[in-house]
Image 1 (tube, rainbow, N blue to C red):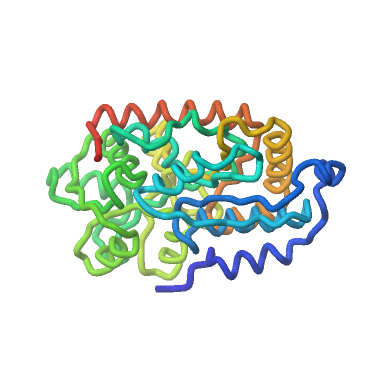
Image 2: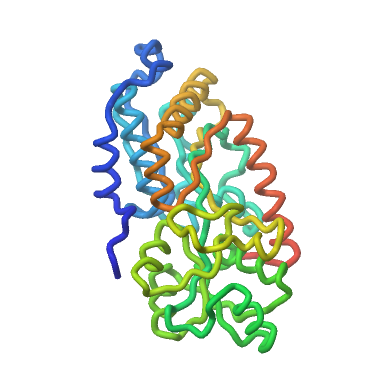
Amino acid sequence: MPPNPLSRRSLLGYAASLGCAAHPLLAAAQGKYPAKPIRVVVPLGAGGGVDVICRVWGDRVTKATGQPVVVENRVGAATIIGTQFAAAAPADGYNLLYTSVAMSINPLVYDKLPYKPDDFVPVARICSVPFVIVVSANSRIKTLADLVTAAKAQPGALSFGHYGVGQFSQVALVMLMNRAGISMLQVPYKAATNAISDLHGGVLDVTMDASTTAIPQVKSGRLRALAITGNQRIEALPGIPTVAESYPGFAGSSWHGIFTPKGTPAQAITALNALSRKIIDAPDFRAMLHDAGLIPAGGTTADFQKFLVEDVRAWAKVVKDNNIRTE
């Protein structure tokens, strides 16, 4: 497998070269907030896209404030373990959660969760994460239209791999099947690498993967990209169309965002949002995201809250219409 350009070492090294000018909004607030190290819980594994971008963000925060940002990976149960841990942390402005679209989807597919979405306050949305629908480079399927044609010719015969019931990769592909009027055999995997391996070996027909990990596979010639799930093409794969170009209105991306436990002081939330927006607006940070196939986000806390309401509404329809449930 070719090296992942979003590796922790490469991106942290890149981040270190971006400069260390202090954020002007927080420079004036030194001695108020933050006055000690900030802990960020990432409910996904070290070295993955969420973890790496969080660490780049944290590096920028440290350079702006002089305070360390300690990233703590608490992995398991489709982000539930880490999210539960973060919900129980003191709401003092020094305990954050950096997570993904699972924050929207998990409450829809699990009957019981050890936390509630309103246990958290949204702080800032960092980026959108388009997924890429991919097949083996040797597949007879060349385009999204080919995939739909083949699936209609043999309903249920083509296999698509996803990373667990209720996971984004399943829900988004099911949404595509609904829009295209097709059915495929669902094959769950415990890890994305296993699905990609079966795709290479011809055991699996199609899957989707985050742009950060799909791009190097496509550029190496090992996989063929059919379409992007987001609402715009990505710079790293400029020739690959979006699903929406064939099915107008289709939009299905993951995202990265920062949350705090409910009750966190407003001063801390305001400062974190202002700093995050400054980081996201920096041209070199945006360039880094674009190179990895990510779409910079930003906006106010109110913008993030509005986005979350719309995100949950979109996925709730897919989950309900297809009875996607898990224990």
